[in-house]
Image (cartoon, rainbow, N blue to C red; front, top):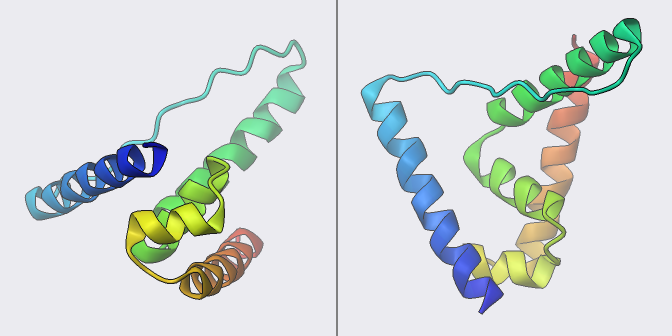
Length: 108
């Protein structure tokens, strides 16, 4: 059942992204409130989170899909079923997504 629900959510998200691209609407990032007291630490962490979120948004959709599902603690087998690809393909996409993210984060 979980895989079925993720498949539906995945398809709805793709439709949403494609429609926004067609309309020319830029994706907006949501601010994450940090409840810590130290302003300097909060500023550094918020900048890092924002940079990571922006880097993830800039990933090609196939890489973004597997990465976001992996961040939701989905095993590779379930990701493969949701996306309709092999587990090996999921692993390859994850490795490429990590490499792209590493390159993007290093080029701040």
